[in-house]
Length: 360
Image (cartoon, rainbow, N blue to C red; front, side, top):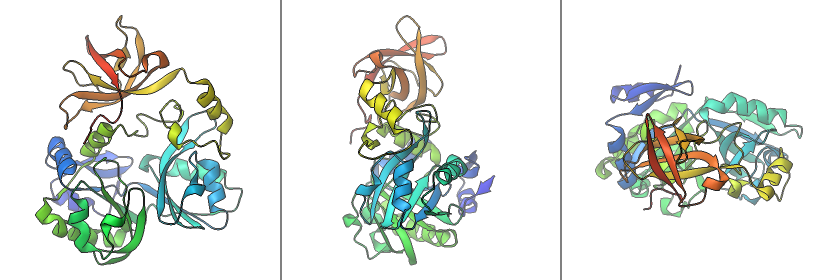
């Protein structure tokens, strides 16, 4: 089990540590609901240093990225980021990722921790254009400083005007006394804030200064359990749960990051799905009665016939109702459709709703 550069600090803070994607990670400190509310209403910090980072550079960097991803990275300008995914040859998804354009010949791909080796091998296998590739995952740490107070709380740590870093843009600047830190207005919580990329040897110093700067704003460390409830309230897909090697971008509602204005791996099959439709779709649902939908529970119709399975589910800390995602036949995917979640011996009614669950 790998440690992040901050694992000892989390343990000293009393975090409950669990194995996650091969890393020893903090799952919670005070408790999921408290940490969730801290991010929704204030500011909290996640250590997500387990994520992977690849640097793709050279004159053909963009050509390689365009080939292996569905979104159109040619639209990126320097200092812009883009959400995308990598399709496989069978209509599924190798991984979802964020692409950062540093300049015309340098991009950073941020991939899921559990997929680092798989993604590296996949991209390498398509690199017939001679792009330079470097896996810097073990060199960098990543802090997600999230919540509506993040801008105000962190402004004292940098001369960059944080209000000018718009959503899905970034700057490379001095932050918390450390040079060449990527300050990115991204995150997977839906509550605003930043993601901070720095070298492992600098992250303890950055962590300490972040908490000093945020003390008067009630800043707290946040575990991965609250990260999961926060992303689910927004309806953001989690790789391994809601998307994987067997789910297509079209089925998963990721048509908006799938651009057929360029060529990419398995484009024809995915374009056929877009044109002809799919037999199933990923839907969001809210429980109509008491009950918590858990990953793996069956989704059924009124007669108990299995329609699909819950891919992500929880009791929403913000809304106090059960919410979830799951794949169902397209005929059941319209907003307002009635479905049922099989919770042990009970069929509990649920309704298909529009995302996000949590409206600010």
